[in-house]
Length: 640
Image 1 (cartoon, helix red, strand yellow):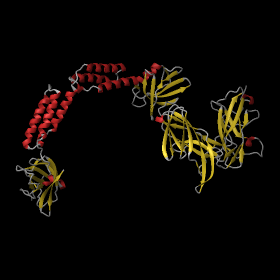
Image 2 (spheres, helix red, strand yellow):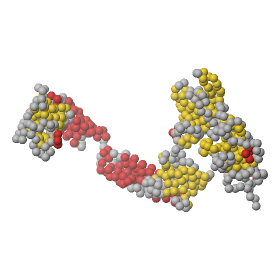
Image 3 (cartoon, rainbow, N blue to C red):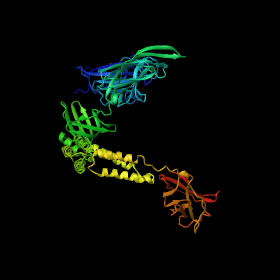
Image 4 (cartoon, rainbow, N blue to C red):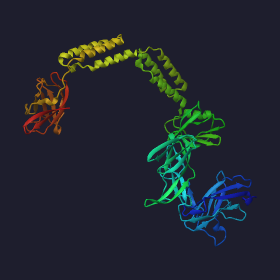
């Protein structure tokens, strides 16, 4: 029985990513890559590889190292890796589909070194670090030396809005490209005292959609659009450029940069070095793109195009095929993971009364739809063909203006019949299409109203409504009324021609053009008499109103309120006397008379409408109160 691998079963290759010298600290260090192949040269996927330091396990007392393995999470070096060894002296890595695995080593001490050794443990299969035994597949990596961090060059990076280095962006997120100075490990050295202005950038669009490049040149903001498979170059004064995907569509870029890094002291350049960066990349993924593994609600389906539109928190996604694509195998599973046919899958969507949540998965040439829930919200999947037909019918209904027809009742009946089909949630695509055809046929031969005639009627009607006989002086009001009556006669005659309607409008406007309108009423010129309380209960105030303008005569009240409320919920009953005076009778909230010769705290404010001879009716505000200086009750008139 063969228990494990032998040296001859595998070939291990291990390479160092970078030079011999690395900067100290777990955020720096040096990255290595292991490649595992079988004896016939094939890449060995999912193979467990042990890693340690040769100085620790070579059995030689004089060779030891303080180096440790670094914990890496989402490509970020976050601490020392003590998962497999409390002192971070050993780790296990697993090869990917390409037979590759990576690890990072580091050291807190300068003037030190370390030599990683990798092997496949033949007789230890539990996933824990094992012991390197003679004959096991093994390889010794190139040595790394550790020194304190120093500036060792420059590199180009892309950063997100938080300033974190990344190459992956979503939607309209901007990728900020900038040159940073790096140490021996290729890591950014902050506070380097170097500046990198006036950087030349080359932007290659390696994706399918346009990108927008924004930068500053000659102290002015600039922008250019780079098309798919095109290359553009710019010079950025401040050393950075921002790249975004146009309309948030999926695409990618490859960027390189050249320039000079300068160190200043007292305003003078004391050190400088030229750089030409390696390419930096950025990938932009549309928020509407459906990835090869995606979960969301099914918003709609189209049985003609055989497509489905998903929806999630970011909105609607691009349509994906659920069938009909050459070279693809389509699989459908219900909520119990039982298989469905294509027809059964579509019927499930059609019959759903609530939202349907599903996972879409693409593996090689197999596309699988897993129905997770048929109770995912209130909105069920929409049949796109039904929706399109419904929209077309609604547009047809909205396009029928009933008032445009000579027989509006017939047009309305056709519209109502179409609306009935549109409002029926069970209407099929064909029924909606038939209803649209029926509506269009029904109104096609209905005679329409003469639009010129209708416009003339509308214009005459507006002219009639604009003339208000009561706004003219009495001598001309009768003439205005007669002119309006004549115009109304023409408007009411269904047989009136367009020209007759136009002539009637002209005649009306001519008739009233020189008539005299009532004057504007300046209410501030109206004065009230000053009075004392009268009446059996001394709770009555009667005011006479006159005008200080000799031309303004016959001041009168058109409207007055019935009551007004004063202090302590007192109530003034208001009335216009037969001789045109204004009379207030005041009582408390229990309707008991208030002696206004002893109680002076009440103030009453109310709105009225005033008129005068040959003057327009005008609103005003009246305030009734006691004037202690005059020992009289007064009424003040103000504009409203």
